[in-house]
Amino acid sequence: MKFNTALLHKNFSGEQASGATLTPVYQVSAFSHSSAQQLEKVFNNKAPGYAYTRISNPTVTSFENRIAALENGIGAVACSSGMAAVTMALLNILESGDEIIVSAGLFGGTIDLFGDLKSFGIVTHYVEQVTPSTIEPLINKNTKAVFAELIGNPKLDIVDIQPVAELVHSYNIPLIIDSTTATPYLVHPIDFGADIVVHSTSKYVNGGGNAISGVIIDSGNFKWDTSRYKGLEEYKKFGKFSYLAKLRNGIWRNVGCCLAPFNAFLNSVGIETLGLRMERLCYNALKLAEFFETVPSIQVNYPALKSSPYYPLAQKILQGKGGAILTIRAGSKERAFELINNLKYSTNATNIGDTRTLVIHPSSTIYAHSTPQQKLSAGVYEDSIRISIGIEDIADLIEDFSQAIEKADNKK
Image (cartoon, rainbow, N blue to C red; front, side):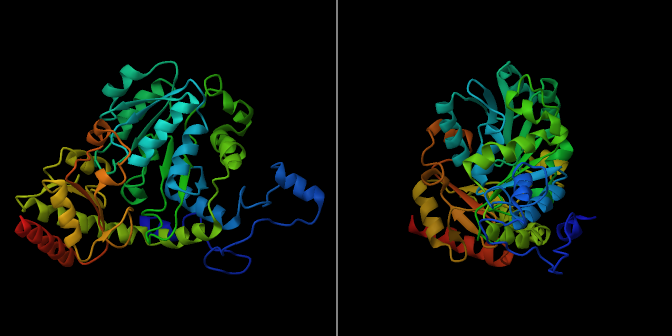
């Protein structure tokens, strides 16, 4: 199937029992069974079925199956948020004394999470760019994972997945990729060697800005050495599903970060238009970035621009596209605020992947808890504005930013 066909039909056919073209919202906490014996079997994974929505739910399962198929994975586990997905993907294999290597150009909330992991004895090593040459010197016997955002948010650096995957696999270490900003429309990280893929599905998968959620997809390709990943010992009987089996029966289940059925339904509705939306969003982002290149007082950062250092990787990995986020530098914090406040069609809000264009001043908001060095590593400056492009007509967006810049200039 081609991409848009797969969104509708790959591993999905509605609910055959009733003929519903979408899996209905099973908005219940618990599921009854015909006998105590049957419920015992379901609870102990000896029979298929549902017992309690914190553990599994038909609406959520349908969404998990669709996103796993879309990402070419063997299965997926949905979570209550993107941050929950990142946390669970890592804690499923980490324990006190372990170390991870991560990109410094991460979303501010993820950086805060790695700070929290210090309390659990987990050490994080940051590299300015995730490449074989930067990673290899940091690898030791305690290194248990390498984590990176495929397109950094908001740095917009791109990871060349394949050589990184080849290196970490030679050390028997899994590569975990957050592909939220890339989306399956641009790339399937598993095809390039990623082992685990994470999405904040609150963003482009959902598309409407109406549901917080996340998902973890397992490639099934990594060969887990249970002498190094001791928590997987009792699950090795599940073979390539051992990571998912431990996740679903262990920390994810016990922490209780399950996805609500209604939010899963909203995601399933949203995912069906992902291809159409991303085509428009990437087009709008490139055209707006090209406009900013003509404005002397603005510095623009967008991977699909020929002036970007990541242009070759955008061609190689992202089908020549740059995603739906760009950043600009306005010259000062005051001018950045003035520009934001002058916009008519762009909403000042902390999200990405909406149908509408969203703008934010990252330094004072989503990176408010970061150190100056962390901000610099993430490509966040006092005059930075992050723009999450929407599906508005590009002529209107260009006109809006043009008048906002003119007003900001006139105020000087």
